[in-house]
Length: 182
Image (cartoon, rainbow, N blue to C red; front, side, top):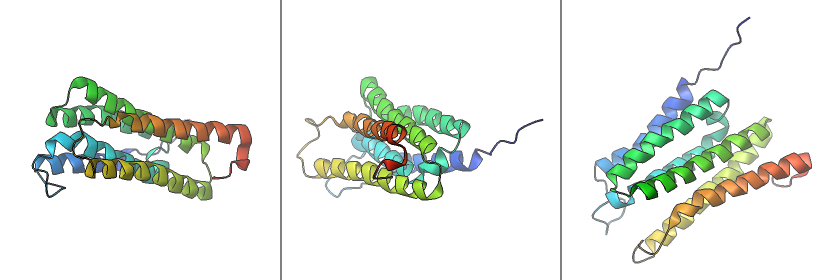
């Protein structure tokens, strides 16, 4: 007896479209700030912001099974390298950014395994959106109101977010339904 598998085409194609949006903006030299003449130097940051924001809002659908989750996580690797190449980033910065993004996606996958009911998924999306988009908004505000990014190393953001989600996963497993934000 063969078991039916859910198709992965819709989530993976949606993720490709979301991932290609910041790449196309940078390739077309669309300036997101009026005083910035070159967006290529911010390409990796723009890419990570879009990826974290989109994944935090769509994670129950994107991470619904292991095949879809693995495809999405593996798709981020070449795209992050492409963006790093476009931004002329060092391979170390690109690898650290990719590691932060992958840890964020793994934590969302783990969280999607815990939230199983529709009502809890909606609360989880709200919490993930608050954490993911809120932290990216703080990163943007810091970039906007600083003179330069030379003194800012924002690669820790994904690791901090992943630890928050891992803590919520552990709390949910230890305390069951008594975790107050779910």
